[in-house]
Image (cartoon, rainbow, N blue to C red; front, side):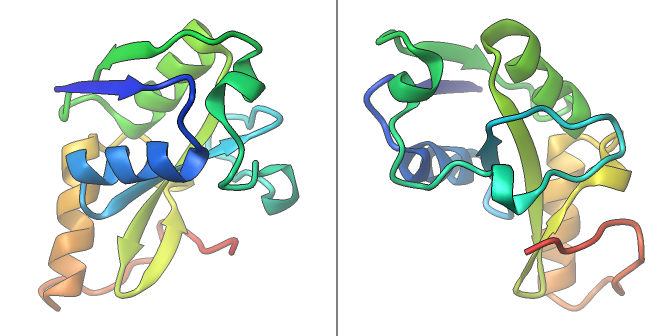
Length: 133
């Protein structure tokens, strides 16, 4: 599936586009990278009204091919390596956004399904991720 990050879009608009692909996932953008299996600090998070071109310093749209079977960590690394975008993916689970730090090996599709299952009360919450918000 294609995800186009428009240069003139705000972080909020990019998040909305990402949620169209994965209803129970959200992506946040940060000023600094995080290590594998490590959470990102909220104080490093870009405000949602920031324009992508202001972060990148260029006014060019980015077209990405996002494979639902791609791991969460690989998606974050793809954005880091190819576009210097520091991101963290969160999963919506029972009304709480959880950083997917300890489950980065799961696919985007599986993360999304895990959130949907939790919202339908078919899965109990496990201490595999945590809430930094």
